Structure formats: structure tokens, C-alpha cells
Length: 369
Image (cartoon, rainbow, N blue to C red):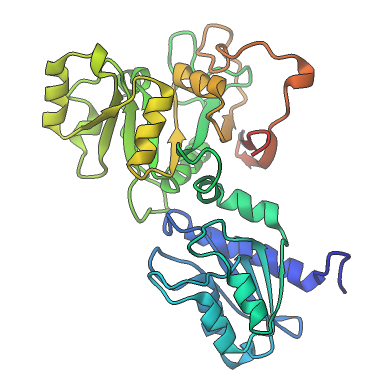
């Protein structure tokens, strides 16, 4: 059975499976996108694969290997347009042609001009090629990758994580935040860390919580995320736990040279911290992007979160909401936002609503993203 858009029901099911497979590359394949692939023959899955590690075989090749001779005359369903260039691995288009695939169904075109064009190559070789199946879901899965080729590529893709009470507070009136949410929510936050290039906090959070900011969950990233502190006046002490654990991950500090003590700079650099320009949000994000950071998880505090939201620099929100009421005295990350008329307050787009024991995770994308 085929829908009005030309895709069969089995192809739709296979794409859902391919998207699930792609997620297995979380934290392991960047700067490449996560990709999954399924080989269909006579309505049955005869092979599947995913891009498991950066520099390793692509999802299409893994699926074709699994299918073997059953791939001849079959359909390949893949979450991204097959690549047509030789990088760390040969072009996937060559493997697809050699395997005898008859039809290719993909979700998203490749935005990378170096790798794009695989669909045209396959069509020229006589294969039937269709794109756009589950495109929105595939783009959301690899949002940092697509951001890198978009109009705001001057800065990293920004994911803001907030652990909130029901009344929108990050802390109680005394400034305590450990722990608003439960163990499952905190484990999910560690998974978020494993999938980004950097984890960012403000100087207030670094001083009060003295965090490690390492990814300590079940997912072990290929590269530990860089730990970044926005500290324009260099208030972070050289005794901070971040600087005592440089063997686990680098530490960068975004700072304003015009407003800090040179002695503090020397002390932090002597401990192994790297200092980068960050007098403003724009300058700090630009510095991170210039250093090859494609994605940033921001973990607070309220002032930094509010400033990023106010400037429109947040691409995705991950709200961990706990069933507690803390009252008006706690830190409010939304307090600095300007009043917005209802008809101009465009809704954020929900991606995930996930119960985590007594807490709830809500993932939302910025309007228009």
C-alpha cells in the first residue's frame, strides 16, 4: 500500500526503525550526523545498520553488509541522503550501486556541499530515489549538524537545560538546587552532556555548586565535552573542582580582558584553564564556534539562561520539571525576558514529553527552527 506521497507503509515503518538505529550513534559520531539505514526486500527487513563511530563505516554500508546478496533488487531506507564523496570512507553511492539496490528512500538532503549530491548520482545510475520521508524528525535528530550549515553558523547550536519546580524556579529562596529533580532526570541530563561538544555554566553556578560538568552516564562520548565557564571577571578560584580534574576534560573560560585581574588570569592559566574572549554573549559564542564547538549544553544559572533566551540564542529547551512548589524567592530564569503580546509569543515546538518517575522532561525547539 502506497500513500499519496509515494511512500509505502513498510517504508514508513523502516524509516522509523532507521531513526531509532541512528540514535545509537549519540555522542560517538560528531561532527558527522547520526544516520541509520534499513534494507527492505519484499516487505521484510533483510539488513540494518547505523553510523557507530566517527571515521567508521557509514550506516548504508553497515546495512548492506548485513543484507549481503539479499540487497540485490531491494530498497534502502536511510535517514540522510547517501554521501557522494570520498572522505574517511569511500562514497556510499558506490556501495549502493555495487550492492544492486533498486530503490533508495531518504529523509533529509545532505546540507554539506562537500558530501551532497548523492541522490542525483544514484538517479543518474538508474536507481529510483525518493527523499523527504520523515524529514522533520531526521532534521531534529541532527539539529546541531544542520545548524552548522544554516544562517546562524557563526555560533554553536545551543541547548538550554533547566531543572525547574512547577512554579518555574531553579532554586529555593536560600539558593539551594540539589536536588530539585530525581535520579532518573539527572541521569537523562548526563546523557545530554554526552551528545554535545561543550557544557557551559555561568560564574555564579560555578562558584556556588563547584560542579564537575563531566558526562558520567551510561553513554560514554567519543570525546568528553569541553567544560566552559562564562566568567568575565575571573571569579573562579584556582581550587575549583573543574581545574582539579583536567585529566577528564578541558576547561575553557570566557572572559573580558578589560574587567579582570591579570594575576587571576595567570593563576587560572597556570592551573591549565584556557581563556577565550567573552565580553558579550555574541563574542563568547563566536569564540566557541571558532574553536570548532558545534553544540553547547547550557546548564545555568538563571542569569545566563535568561540572557541567552532574551537574545534569541537558544535553539532547544530541555525542561526537567519536578512536582514541587518553591515560591517566588527562588531563582527565575525567565524573569529577565521582556513582556511579549500574546499574538507575538509564538509557541515553541514540542519534540519530547517524557515521564521520568515523578518528574517530566519536556524538549522544545525554538519557533522557526
